[in-house]
Figure 1 (cartoon, helix red, strand yellow):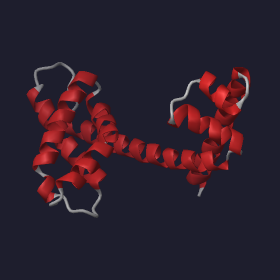
Figure 2: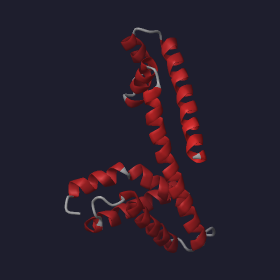
Figure 3: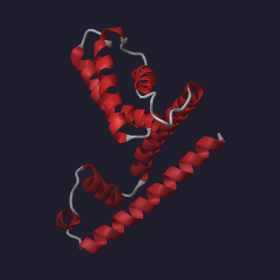
Figure 4: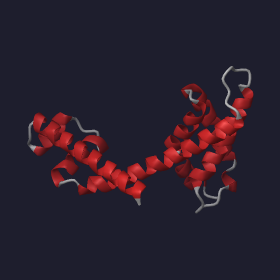
Length: 172
């Protein structure tokens, strides 16, 4: 890859997924931080090997997997170390969980679009913009309790919609 800016954008936009993957393999936040830092260094050094248009997540997860293995070798004196087969199984579960997370995010976006305008607007203001209940009430000329009720109903509708969408995905 020749464009460092594009690579940095890919790397930063996938940090939370990469961290969740690493954490699911090492079970300790401090160790996950260390492994993620090493993974980012290797990813940066290997940026030229990445081809635009290929699956960045799969590529970065694979590098992270090998960094976890290297981390395990450095920590071999600790009492609880999973064997390589167990780690491979955990990596597969983490990958599957990531795919489920991505699917649920997509379902959530679709479900937000299905909300009525008042609920969608309240969700947008509260969770995308980080507005307080008071500021939403002021902007919409409603009481704080009315805003709370709208958000409660919107969250209920979203939960129902996402769960229904997941059920449909698993049965199709």
